[in-house]
Length: 344
Image (cartoon, rainbow, N blue to C red; front, side, top):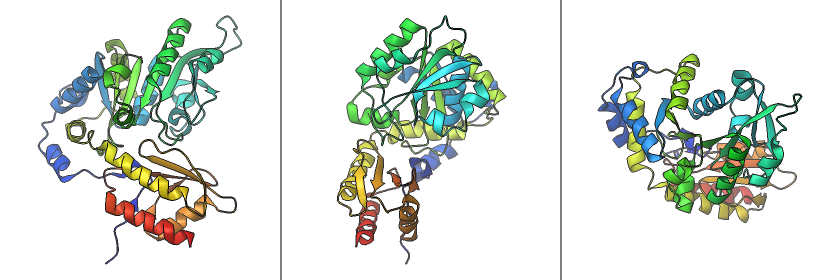
C-alpha cells in the first residue's frame, strides 16, 4: 500500500476535520451582504471583541483583508512602508499598486522584523511635493519569509509611537498571529491595542477551509465593507465558512504548539543534513533552509516529491516546509526518513 502524501508546502492545505465539517453542516445561514448571516455576525463580533476593537468584516482570503486595509488607509500616490519580503508586497499580485495606487518603500529587517528607528528614517518629508506621502506601515507576524519569526511586542509599541508622531497608520498582517501568541504568551488584546487594523487568517494554522477577518474601528470597517463588495468579496450564505472559523477558534488554537514542536524536529534533522548549508531558527511552524552550493532547490523539491513529500522552493537554493493540522508525528517520522535517504 502506498504511503499517503505528506504536504508541507503550506498550512493552507489542511482539510476540515470531521468535527469541523459537522459544525459547518449545522450552521444557520443567511445573506451576509444584507448582514443577515448569524454565523458570520457571530464570528465578526467575536473577533472584534477578542482584539479589543469595535468591528470586523469576514472576507474570503487574507490577501483581500490586507488589500482592503491598505485601500481604506491610503489614497492613490501614497506610500506604504514594509519589509521587502512582506506578503502584502511579494505575494498579493501587486495589489497595493494595482488596487490602491500606492508606491512601496522597503526597510531593512532581520528575518522580516524591522525597528522603530528604521520606520522613522523611512518617512518622507511631508513638505516635499516631489516625494510620495508616507501613509501606512505594515507589520507581518509571524514573518513568512523570515521562517516564522515573531515580532517583539515592545518594539511594535515603539513603531506605533513613531506612527502616531508622524500621522501614519499601522496595519498588522496577522495571518499567523495565533502561532506567535502560542509561543510568546501575548494576548489578542495586547496586539489589538497597537494597530489601526488587523488581518487574521483562519485558513492557515487554524485549519479552516477559507476565510480571513479584518478588524478595526467601526468607521474603517464600514468603509471596508464597501471595498469588499467592490472587489467581489461580498459572499452570500457564508455562514458555513464562518462556522468553520468559529470552530477553529474554539478547538485549534491550543494545539498550535504541536505544529511548532514538529517543525523543530524537521529543523534539527535538516541542520545535520549533508546537503543543507543553513537552517533559519525554527520558532513556529515554518522551516526555511538553504542548500549548499551545487544543490538546486527545484531539484531538491522534486526529489522529495518523488518520495511522497511536498514542499516549496522559495529561492534558487532555498526551501520552505510548513507543519500544520494534517501533519502528525508519524508523518514527520516519514519526512525525516526520506531526508536521510537523500543524504546517502
